[in-house]
Length: 239
Image (cartoon, rainbow, N blue to C red; front, side, top):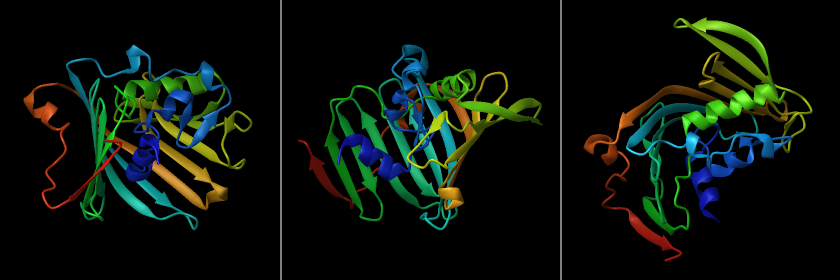
């Protein structure tokens, strides 16, 4: 199992907090018809600036008769070269997984197994994409007709747009799959993403509750380091 598969499996990463597969035009498991025309997460303008740390809190709910139901809180710290994701049960607050990525190495803590897996990597950039990339991607989806504006609403004084996937433009392994998103009308900052597969037998909702950019001082930089797991068994792969 490669690094990206391990990260996606461990973190249930989707949408904004998605592995770098989003560079190819995928979001939430979907593939746009012409991914080469979409923004690339590799572009410098979509990376977290040097000297800054992006901090994001997202709630992810999964439901449906074909799904393993879950309700999780994902917290991400992201810099130009490093990232740390902590996934907790949103109800109990119990940590399920923690993933720390830095140039040349990824560490994954599995709370259920009480195990830390350390993997060697050739990557020099984090496994997650920035909020700026996510906004640019959804703007491109609308501009290219992959999603359409289906409605508007005002929340906290800001106009938000409801987007819906367009049949024939939005591709996935399930022909009947659908997706919606709630974005800021001006900046396209994504507030919510919902995915529906198999006619509703698998549903996933992603709510972005907090996105902020911090100076990379001692306190914020410390958040990029893995918490201590003194009793965890350590496994090394590729070393």
